[in-house]
Image 1 (spheres, rainbow, N blue to C red):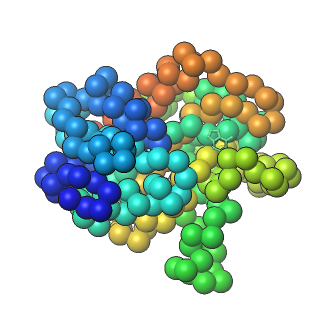
Image 2 (tube, protein in one colour):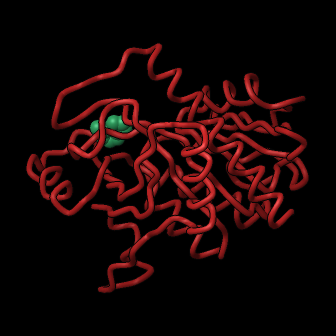
Image 3 (tube, rainbow, N blue to C red):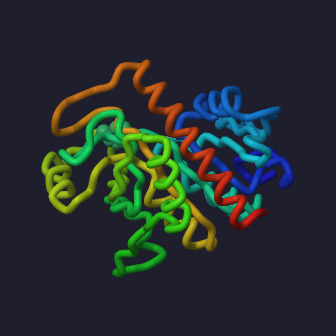
Length: 241
Ligand code: HPA
């Protein structure tokens, strides 16, 4: 057991898919994993382990925001020896280069968070995805004809951002979507020398005002989960754990 996860070390797989919403962790487990077993319900942050194409994989909710994902990712890396975490989430579209339902593969994550100040002082660390995992996921998306765009994410500490010009500024610098977790996840993966990737479907668009229906969100979420699961299988074939 770790402080926030009530599992023994062998109950969590080396690979974890991590949605923000714990009910989505349950959905992933019940829909895509064979023989899923729930290992956590502390604070309702559901976690399950099962298998996909013979590979043991867990699905663990992260909650919303960088402090929350920071707690779960830290404990998974530090106390459960997790090797790779793929965040499967949603983001708001910032750029005309993406439309709703596209999947943003987050190669890097800018942030307005002060979370890294205690680590790096005046240096601005650049949280980035694991290159090999990102390349595998891009290949999977291409083969499956999924509408994937690779680029930067903006991990904001504010869903209701009082800074109304920052979205346009970041879009001008090539940032594709805004969400609230990737930068903390990438930083922790770097701290523990593990792999991380965030893939996010564009659920709403801050420039065009486009939104998705609940059914569209579910379908694109399912596509993204399969993309993540297939990527884990390939990573496992290459490296095994
Ligand atoms: N802001 C932050 N996170 C999000 C958004 C957003 O507009 N849409 C989906 N996740």
